[in-house]
Image (cartoon, rainbow over all chains, first blue to last red; front, side, top):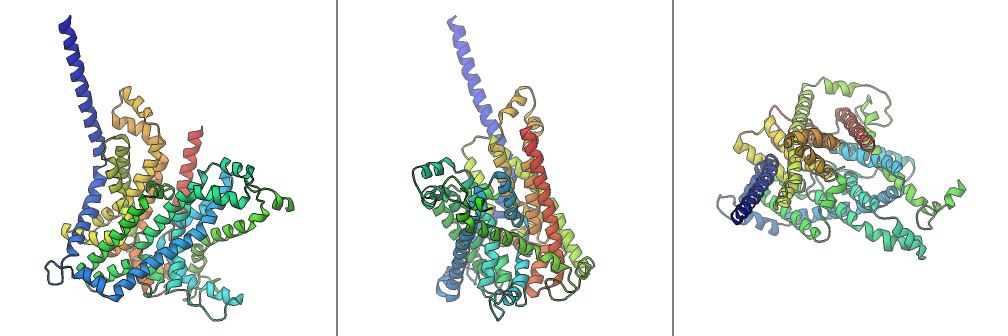
Length: 303
Length: 277
């Protein structure tokens, strides 16, 4: 009797152990399903980035040096490029919030059917080629473009305005391209807000404006943060639109990296700029991650 | 009409009339989101060297100049090939990864997830010059393989996020039921899980296609020689002057995108009616 009970106990224990190791194996096997994707990230992103990091510390004579970073500090032109990049990114993000937040609010107030219809106007540009949209603005904003023509016909201004190949054009194009990235998470966040809170606020005597600013707006900030962060990060590394609409007058970090390689074939300088850009991006993300769940950034955009 | 202006517009006491400014600015914003892109379409049918609106005389000469140019045709076929291959490579790889991360409960999952979405966070320029270097070493610079691999890298985060969020709302017990009835895991996945996340998989595939088809910066560095992509050629043409041929190509690209989006919407509607039915 006693012997058999010990036997079954041992059997149970070894069974349990077997099950546990089976489960662990199964988990690893499932995890292994992501290995092809991870391998691509490793080979095409992580290893080359690591190499760029290494190259950024190699000077013109081929030995270890900090000259690539020194240049960034000592040369005024580099400081200006970083300043422009931040200025453009901040302005674009700010304008996107000013334009996008009211639209997201408007859509969040509509019945779902109508809201989905309006959402198409946000998704359509989101899906349309970046290059095509940039080109459209180039055509619209040029000297004899539609905007200038209409503006002068309506008597808003007499001389053709310089709307493109400068900061104006860059900002107009970038705001247009970034708007969906802001609107989608903001709208998603607003939809999730329980309308009963507003009813309660109104019931307790809050004016519509007060109900909005003390109840609705604070509840919509996580979505707003997420969208604004996404826009800001994308702006920091943006290349195509500023390169075309800026006409060489607005030089961002990404454009300097490209010309360092295409014109000067200076990998050290390009890598150092790249490393600084990456570090800045990561710093922004890291600081933001303390205020907002990063998953939210992608929540709306990937619809 | 007057009654509508005075009627309450939300849970608070605000009326539609008081919110008129919101409606007006929102409609203007929506028009500005969509219209600028579409203005290219009528312009592409202009006969003039200068893009004018509305065109004085209509013609299809810019379409002819596109279709008759061996250079543009080659670039178009390169882009379509790369986009199709990217879709075919990135979708299964990404869906597998999303499923693996969802089903496995290892503690390292978060790191793996973050790694898989880094291509979205890292500035594209950096990916481009990194890939350029890596491809010189791997001797796949200016090849289709290289282009597809780099575009797959960009598409993976989208596939993982879209499919992953669909899996989150899917009840894995259904698959477990099939497995307890003797189906191997792959079969349970293919016959039970996959049909239910079909919509997300289709959308991820379309997004992967578009990601590759639209991509400019990476293609600038690693597509060249005999294999430049359409967007690379367009970008170079745009830097020089405003060639109306670009308007005709843009129009065709808008048509393509709209068609793909319609497919996605229809797939979504089919998916939803099935869910509710």
